[in-house]
Length: 351
Ligand SMILES: Nc1ncnc2c1ncn2[C@@H]1O[C@H](COP(=O)(O)OP(=O)(O)OP(=O)(O)O)[C@@H](O)[C@H]1O
Image (cartoon, rainbow, N blue to C red; front, top):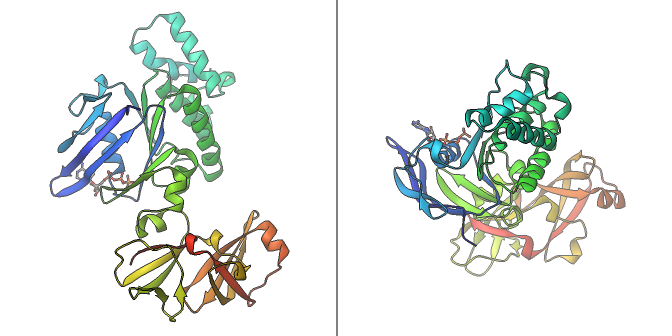
């Protein structure tokens, strides 16, 4: 399938700072695409280049195969929604949504119909006559989204759109955004520093580090097969065990062998990485096993997290048990347990 948007080796320098460093990627029609990275990794700069507020120092941005690198923002078929998206305080919800269409001088009847459609989509029809200061944060966010969507852009760019919301509301709005994106069939590109948010919402995630693209893949792949140690630790929780590669096998600090599927060309210093939910208490069923002592436990409703002190790592291993597993085997701090995990669940990266 032909990509909607292509980035070809896009670079942006501010003086000596390389904010974006040779990023190449394709974004497909109807995709929910997340740009994920720590503060200063270049997410916003990349988004601003897509919107046309910055021009690449080198490389090209193509929309439908046409180079738009130097096309001004107002001539691009896209819309940008910021975290601090300001609604007009003196206008009602309906007027705020209608504003962009009125600027385009569309017929009154069409504006009325499209505003009504958007109010239904964001489920705020009963509040159409309210002013922004009579809305909750989540409701204001929906109006901002409606205002961006009502113009039917082909591409919507969202810069930390849920950043100002509390955790619970954020979770609800994540699902809401996904539903709206699906219903409208518009391509969404969202900037976030929240890895959980990217996992929940996106069809694909691009991880940026120091302006460079580290990995671009669907959430599951990013989670299960991180491209590097940085990606492994950035997404979700990861147990990291320093290992030595002697050409034959991987050994932990205490000399015990760690069974893993090894990448080629690994140097002597490496780390083994295992997700907490891959560690099991039925150790005999797995290639790797070792004993340790429980030092801490945290109950989370759906799961139980235990920290286990072991000889293979200075830091305790984090192990996540489902409620069923935890019920089958009552545990307390101080208990000795035997942990096991599979070689195929062990990723290995250069240290
Ligand atoms: N106008 C500018 N002039 C100089 N340096 C800039 C400018 N804009 C961004 N930078 C630098 O480029 C780098 C990337 O910034 P950018 O805002 O794109 O990162 P980000 O990933 O969006 O970060 P955050 O999550 O904190 O918003 C940073 O080192 C930043 O200081």
